[in-house]
Structures are given as C-alpha cells and as structure tokens.
Amino acid sequence: MHIPKVFIFDMDGTMFDTEQISYICWRDVCREYGYELPEDLFRSVIGMDNRRIAAVFGRYFGPEFPYDPIREKKVADQLQYYRDHVIPVKPGLREILAYAKRAGSCCAVASSSPESQIRFLLEKAGVASYFSVVQSGEDVAHGKPAPDIFWEACRRSGAKPEQALVLEDSRNGLLAAHAAHIPSVFIPDIAPVSDDVAALAWKRCRTLADVPDLLEAEEKAVERA
Image (cartoon, rainbow, N blue to C red; front, side):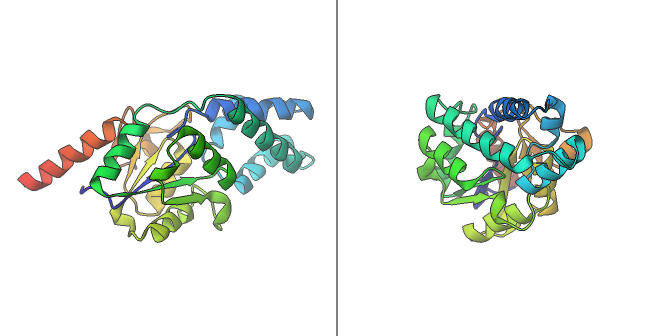
C-alpha cells in the first residue's frame, strides 16, 4: 500500500483514551434516572451513532427509557469532565500526525461523537491544526457500521476510498471501513472485536506509533517488487 492521501481517524478509543470516561458518564446519568447500564451493553455500542445507540438502549431497557434527556445530560457531563481534566492522548498520536504532515497527507476525523465535542477535544489536546476535515456521524444519513461517514470524509478530503486509510479501534468502525472499501488498521482498545471482524482490517497494530513504520515497510516492499 502506498502512503495514503488521507488518514481518517476515529476519535474515542483511537486518538484519545476516552471510552471509559464515556461509559462512566453514561452509567452515572442512567443511575440518576433509575437504570443500571451494564458495561458490556455500553461496549457493544462503541462506534455507533446516536440513532443506533438509542435503538439498542430502547430494546434493552424498554420503550419507556428516556433516552434523549439522559443522553443530553451525559454529553454535558462528559464535556464538563473534559474541561476539568487533561485529555488522555493515545500512544503514537502525535507521531503519526507529524508523519502525515511530512508525507503531505490530509488528516480527517470521522467520529460518531457530536462535532462540538470532537472540536473541543482536538483543540484542548493541541492537535486541531493537523485536521482539515472533521466529520461527525450525526451529520450523515447512516452512522457506523454503515460506510457513509467514511465516504463523506473522503469526499471532503478530495480522495477516493482506495487512497484513504482508516484508523479504528471498534467493531462498528471496522465494519464501516470495510463497507466503504477503504483499507483500515485495527488498533485494539476496550471495545470487543471478534476475530472475523478484525480480519477485515488491512493490518493490525498495537499503537498508532506503529503505523508509520508499517507504511514505510510496505512502501519499500512495493519499490523492491
């Protein structure tokens, strides 16, 4: 594979170590409303857009579950947490962003989180200047695991799917990349990913820091061929 024209980053669990923070916020607000949110149920919706999460929670808790007010407070609580704490950056993020800049590649975020939250985290972590495209799953017709969010990130970046590389930690993100016909690198976090879904990724890396070395090795292999 050649150096991609655009690196498409998932955010939570890929760029920032925020999935557990999200779970705690969901859990605590659910408790305020009298519901107990199992962690495995939360992990099953990692990477999904708001509409899909609402459907999953509705099936689990029942039609009377007040999803909208719970989510509204969860989003507000999570944003307040981010304001009050240092954002935990995943290993290798700054290295791969610097690599993409040196290579002349575009960087895009394609996250199911609200755009306001994405931009806040990018700014607070000091990496916003690297990203020319910020794409929220709330602004496409179908969120992950549908391909729409990645196709839109490609369109806005001026790249074809085969010229992109998706960096993902979740089952839903890997399925979305596969559906979009975009190669992906799977970087595991807390989200459960079965072997058959993990096998859909082009490669698997331990951290983001491993991706530049992987691409350089692939580039050299192509030159030797």
